[in-house]
Image (cartoon, rainbow, N blue to C red; front, side, top):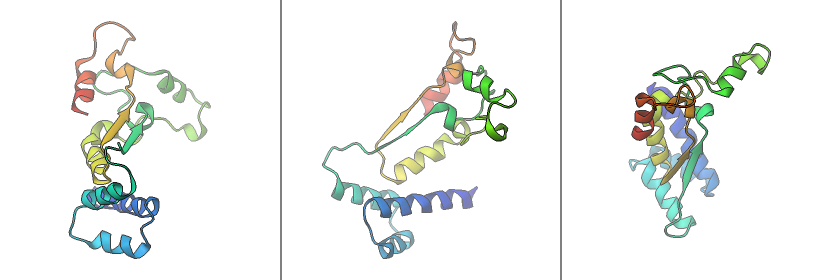
Length: 147
């Protein structure tokens, strides 16, 4: 798990370097610097964008959350479609996706590390209303409150 986190962070640092025009040497020194990735990302953002600019990320619930049948979540239209044999190439589903449901804290840390100060996400309504209507699922509501 630790190795995976570092690999994703290295990719994020490289993306920062490419987006903001930092030469490769800067990336190499930034990767080895003792300052936090968030500080270097925020410095780059401050130089390139006007004060008060919101730098953010966005995700789609089905594409990132996973945990398709956990904690009382009902099936979504996409869950049903993806589980129908022959509908999706290679039988891929969003059952695990990026496992954001279980790894959201790590994902939020990664967003902070690249200097993001906004996060737009979609809500998996079947996680909130497993039957489509009725009483909200407390575990679904709790997930989005924690996020």
